[in-house]
Length: 170
Image 1 (cartoon, rainbow, N blue to C red):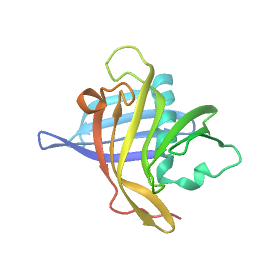
Image 2 (image 1 turned 90 degrees about the vertical axis):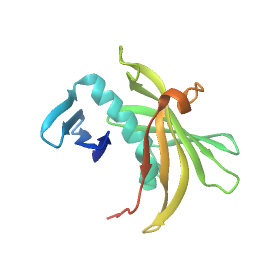
Image 3 (image 1 turned 60 degrees about the vertical axis):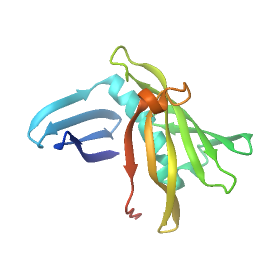
């Protein structure tokens, strides 16, 4: 997985990527694409990236249709899946609305959103819109962040808003 993006801080572009390649996680972000502002790797970054890959399985639903994924139903609107990623098992919780549309996905993800030691923390995304591409229906507008089940998501946890304009599946 390689996630490339340009984010803007006060209008100034910061370009970079988060990645999980051959079992190793890393991050690299540069101001104007030239001046490093964040570089990170190591076991904590790798473990966090595993959680991210699991959460982003909502964009490749075929990953969730595997004999290796264990599904459980908590209630009619809550589904749980245990998904193996890079030798770890990540437990995902999917919330669906009355029409069967994904409303949210959440998990315990390794991270340090408070800036201290890495630890398991509530992480998730609220799906606000969906579209279909090449036979896959996926969320196309999401709010993403930490403290998902702790009631702090809206105030302190949300760090990203994602819009998918187009998806190509090969």
